[in-house]
Image (cartoon, rainbow, N blue to C red; front, side, top):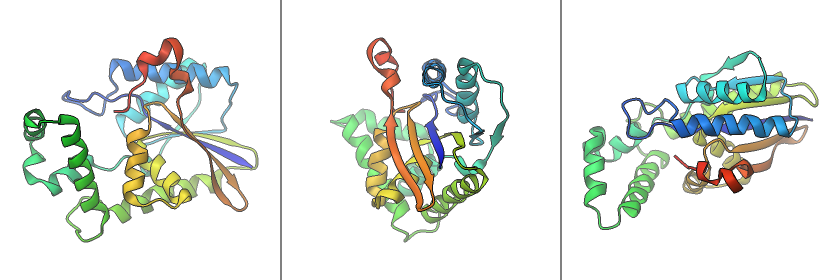
Length: 229
């Protein structure tokens, strides 16, 4: 049966003018991932990445470390949802990122403030009562699954695919298989490390989750490279 490996991108440039670009740490994570896949002697019949800059950069640095030259197929179905649109629909002031920074800085517990905001914004998005988003929750899930179904149909028996994507698509697919609620899917996403691997098996009975959030390559001397943003 075919196997599909979904990889979350390396660390993005949080707080910089172009968030979508990998940070220096993100580049290191991507190369380390490539060395780990090389160590495991994994070879792939199809390599895909989302249309975001951080997806392609992760793919390029990973494949270079794997010593692989292969066609990278771009598919925007694997793009992340627009988190700023979701947050600003919940709190219109947050259209200005500095307003978010100011509120977090003024909070007694900044980390809790971030979590409360994310949960409230995500809940509004997923409850299905509002259609003022660039992409609704339902549309996002349908887009991701179209990408997965397209890939499943393209893979032959025993073939392997490597997909460079974001936490949202990987967790939507895992969450659907496990029967999780949207908020539980958000919890999954918050736990998914940068450059972590999620492995799925494409069997005759459907898609099966084999491993989730495999980031063993960030243990030991590489522990300093472990991030979640």
